Image (cartoon, rainbow, N blue to C red):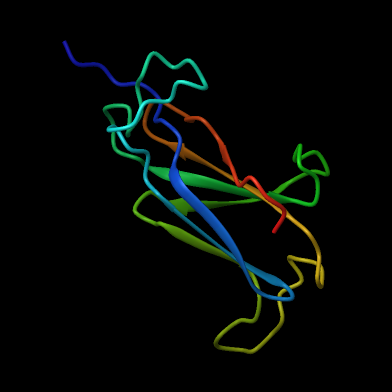
Length: 125
């Protein structure tokens, strides 16, 4: 009998500053070929048996995401998200990030069952 669960954590989560007011985040979808021993999940990962519907990307100036964090929903087939920077059409500068600010980021995968485990980028961006 097959059943679905919430997805596991994303893998290869990376972040890089792309300017004084912009950050590029990238990741790979949860992988069913790895085991998540740290969170004691009974070994499930991957999409949980149901396709990834979307991701929630969060960023904050505090490591506990309490300031409160800002967030965006990203489609399930995406593997990157750009925060801030300049609009390529208008040239307008985004006010999403503070000039030369330090940020933390995390991402959570969702499927039809619900939220998976959040993956936090381990360094200040």
